[in-house]
Length: 161
Image 1 (cartoon, helix red, strand yellow):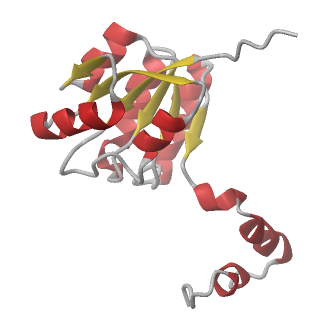
Image 2 (cartoon, helix red, strand yellow; image 1 turned 180 degrees about the horizontal axis):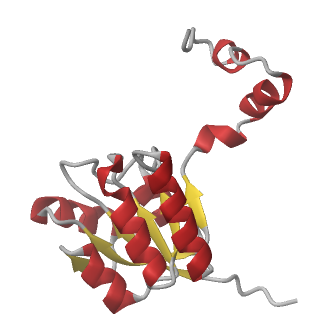
């Protein structure tokens, strides 16, 4: 049996001061054993410097489009929490043939979601949204049984009304 695990070239897009690097998606990528972070892009020079210290990528870019075209990563982490830039970033990643992990919220409108899905389908790449609580057992049980508030009560909070 071959014990060599598959490795993926990963590029991370951040946006310091405008959604930053999401809900620690950059750190999650750094700790995943199959990911090699080859590059990070951030238009903010100070944010890029801090990301370099945190992530230790091979190369740094201030323009994510330049990074995508030069690096040709297999996976792109679209980190900013603000959805105003997600559409353009996801489309650019799909254009170079990269699968995408995008922070929540996915987009500003259902139409933008559709455009992202269509672009990734056309490119034959995966699109994953970082809705991490969808796989938590109590969330899955709550959805399956229709008990919307069960999740919140099990977590010890009041939750939304």
